[in-house]
Image (cartoon, rainbow, N blue to C red):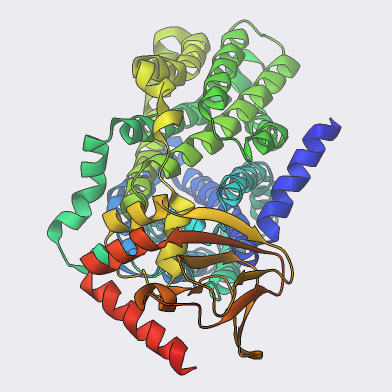
Length: 541
């Protein structure tokens, strides 16, 4: 137990000591809570207007536009600065939720409320693909990337647990409109939180205006079987979750005799399991191999639902759903981290955009499949269907799934760092990835000199974390931090170091040897011109 608590504390510490990751995580917490709460509020409102049929129809008209828009929305963080896209996405969500709240509170026409809510749901699909692109660029070391994904998984699990309760309280007290009003305010707070984040610039080849840019994510999935397999698995879990939304009612009313309110308790048990799964997902931080965690989570998921087919007591069902929720949390965090490591960095947002479309579509498909299984074989058939779906797809993946750890070696953290440097921002993705693979990590203690004036220069340095001072002839010229680099003058002019650079704080850097540095500059004129200009500016200072 103490070990799990220590792992949880370490994961949170890793994320929160990075100011930009901390802002992103808090904003994501508000976003996730708002997403779940307004979904529940609109379904309740639609049910009051026209019963279960209207609720299903409204769910469909919210999910389908979002599913269709998701691949197109995922292009935005590649064409424009991801941090800016995330900020504007939160603003759009806040405005749409506020508009929906206005219609509901003023008792406007239902069709107008449904339309405004559909706009809000469609705007939501911008967030996750953008976060998937931005977080690797904000992480200073690979450990921070895994920790950020782990914390994001916890945030979603906690939201599933808390948001329905908050939504229910607001609906009972003031009505669905006030849910939209409060949640709209929360996502606007998210926009304020992420506004100061700079992050990387747009991907260099994402501004060419090619029509094929919209299809590049699909082309990656066509050509990369590992990424295709992961997207399929991660998307299919939402079919199972859509089925669960219906199964909760069937189990509560028809099997366990809990009444309609029992569906909420079963849903909360699943969410509580995800929160308890924090102890397991924390152990993923720092792991190079994540497939064992994926396989274990799928096995636990299958066993939990298999036992549930013979469990006839309420307590047993609640406990088994909690176990399933914990295994799902572990599966989702490990799978998303593997996808970030597998998909090419320059189209990562588009790949996650396709996944976002599958999330929306899968939830709707699952809600349609569950009643069919219930009609064919009752609650038992639906429970078996939920339990075997993910493990069956994993079995179909066969050896390719087992080999994912070996192929998931895209250096996304290093690529994100290079993209944040003015010197390399214009490099095309293949060259950028090749350069990232040549980087060597190193650390610097307080007061340690990384380069010394007058020494021969054979490396370029990119700062991942910490503060460094530049001293020339005993006089401090400037200070450098994350997103800055140094050492290009000696490499470009085949000379000696013109300054001493020492660590003012404990620092982390990546070094790049002279040969790959000059090869990139020789092959890319824009980068060569930038390097020459930056070196001239440094010499002038």
